[in-house]
Image (tube, rainbow, N blue to C red; front, side):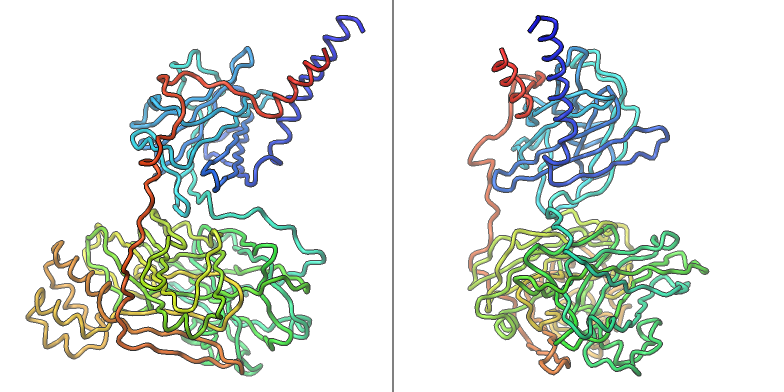
Amino acid sequence: MGVFSTTVLLFSFGIMCALAQLHDIPNRYDFSLNLEFEQPGAATFKFFYTYDMDNQMLKMAVKVLSLGWVGIGFSRNQFMPDTDVAIGWVDDSGRGYLQDRYAYTRGLPRLDQKQNYTLINATEQDGYTVIEMERPLETCDSEDDFTLTVGDTIYLLYAYNSMDPTSENDIPQHQYRQSMIINLFGKIVEPPVPSNPEYLDILADNVAIPNSDTTYWCITQRLPQNIIDETHYITAFEPILDTDTSDHIHHMLVYKCANLTNSSAANNSDRCRDVHDEALECRNNLLIAGWAVGASKFSFPENVAYPIGGARKDTYLLIEIHYDNPNRESGNIDSSGVRFTLTTTPREFNAGVSGVGADVNANLFVPPDTDPFTVFGYCPAGCTNRFFPASGITIFANFLHSHTVGSALILRQVRNGVELPPIDQNLYYDFNYQLANHITPRVVRPGDDLIVECLYNSSGRSVGTFGGESTIEEMCFSFIYYYPEVPITYCVSYPNTDQFEGWVQKYAPEAVDQFRTIDMLGDARDIWENVQWTNQANRDLESVNINGIHEITCGSVTNGGGFENFYVRNLRPPRITLPYQQPDVCAASNTGGDEDGGAAQLAYSIVAITCLVMLAMFF
């Protein structure tokens, strides 16, 4: 073979290797996002990632229809300051660069002394720039890096410029920049759609959204006859949002209805308080699906599905839609709802969904203008002993939920006085981004205590916030997805009212007689409005809630399809003899990359190395 022919062959082979890397990117990563810009004329920007929890690493790739630099960043807010940034590019010689920087201001982010992002591959092809990289979730560089914590809501910032930097220290300002809110770690690789899937929609039927700030709308729907006759298994659910009214949909919950008859189910599409009593009782029955603003499709693991119909004698569903209409607009017509994917093929485990946390009533109270304020909701050993099988339940996903002053939520587990690692947590909760997160499966045994800890930030509010259904009121909930299915629907608590009297005597002595006449804290709101709120008053009130006596309610569906409550009165919180301590991974080892003052890192992907080896073998 002549030299010219050999050169052409090798050149062609190199091109094929580069193309193979470029087009194989989606197959090398578990998750992908198509990121959009508000600015007109922006290029396609794709973000791919895989997380390796065993090695605590995040592997990423960005693919942009541009031949300049590209950047990706992580932040607690949507702005440049306080953002951990990686900037990469490919120069005219084909050499790839990646820099770990931190934005303290709106200017060019400062180059980190520790370079904790590692360049895996850098390629330009067909007008695209592709940068592949990885970084530890915890870099132990607290000054210049952002810790990626499982469960937390964060902002993903992305930007690019069509021009390459003229040097490693002369990077032109971005031409396009945008941010989006995200939870990186709450996903599973999408299981295959079942063969011969069936679909079931439960939708609002042209509901005129009332012109009040908060409305809970309930709709009952009879199941199709084939589901009534034969057990089906829900493998996924997703929202169907009316594009004209999606801004008004805060959350949707779907329940199975026990003992609902054709007559009591008829014509039930109204405010929840106005539907038939038997239909309203569906909200105490088994929850199937929960969706809230910001979430998308939820899929069950391949070995788990939610059973419905057939021998279970399910006939009706009820969907509760929370309409949020703070401006009290009129004329909005909604047809939103939920779509289920089903199969007739059973899976290894039948799933259940239950709510745990603080009972929704006016004994949940957050003082004005305080940060943080903590509220606990308990599901005690008495309830788990009564309802959980001997082998326990396995929680595989969880949906944390509070309202607009909620700032953090933690689902905690205590076993025989020893606190285990949190089942789930979001220390940077965002009301506008709520979703059911898949978690590392956790077994909860009979006798375990579950605690939902909710932190609130009421800064700027001049009055206190009580528990309630409105978005300007508060909740403290964790909806757990688990297997095997058990009949418990919810397990909630609230602090006993009488024990607040000592606090009232100290901080509102003139209101003691009035306080003694009320059932709930919210029954005499003027008491709380007239308190001189201090940090000590806040902490003392917090202590009554956390450490005081609670009233517990565990709701369950009976074998006959009815509903009953199991109460635990005057219960003290679980005694924790050994609190959980988060391991300090940075004390054990000093992780991080090169400390060479930010020299560019150059590396090759496995595919590129393979190509070079094959070229060497050819010679």
